Length: 386
Image (tube, rainbow, N blue to C red):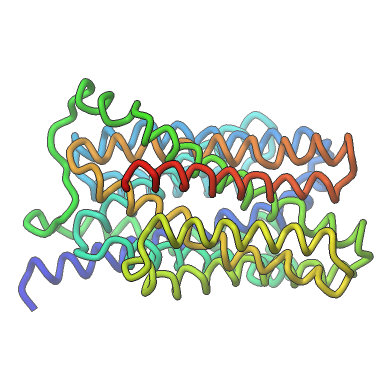
């Protein structure tokens, strides 16, 4: 194996590791936040503000690191991400002041946004089949997210508490930092494009009708997925009288579906086509939500299966954009992925408002509306290509 291929392999494995860690740190928020609130005596709204700071950090990272990836190099975005994780995780698991929790969780969220942008950009740049590898990358996120609740419960049953859940991830953070500091980036490998940053050229491709509908897809997808992940357990316990253990298992099935769907989808996306497979999955997810909510109790199991169909939409959407645009791709991806932060903040909040106004069943049903919005946007994009 020549040196270039070896470097491609190393940065690909490093990206998979970073996304696995990203999935773990995203998914442990749910199990650990109630323990933090209980320990510190905070209200639910105060705890929610801490989580919001992470989404704000994610949003900032997507807007900043896309530019940095073309200025200082793609691997250095992952170095920045690892350093931000090191600062955020060590601080968050050590401090006791409310303002400090918000500050350090901002850095955790910033690191997640840098990982999201940096890893996707690296895979697009070094792999000849980005659709397949982006779905495998997202599979690693799903694997981390699925295992994280089990890991968190194990640590919290012992003496580590919620702080130990975060503190014990630091060896993986240090490994990620060391790997990207040591590796030389494979400059000759690439199908994606870097190039010098040009704001005027970026504006011409970022603010088009086609990209508007791509932004709608990303926003609606994240709103639907995070909304389902946030409110599924509450719906099952309050409306379907499901036990806490079974509802937690249903959430694990949801994340497991995301993981499995991305693995299987990585082999299908290039054969079926990006727009077609995303449209099919969004409509199937919508059907699962509607039947799971409106049908008899035995069909409630369709709700966690939505993860299987949600799974490939985001990585396939990123692959679609990377195929269309080569120059200034880093900043464009950063702007695109910033809608993950917007959707992540808006989806659970909007569904929460509907829960208060009309009941949790109708509120959760808003995820079906978001799925239809995805299908509509894909239909418009498809008509423009024909």
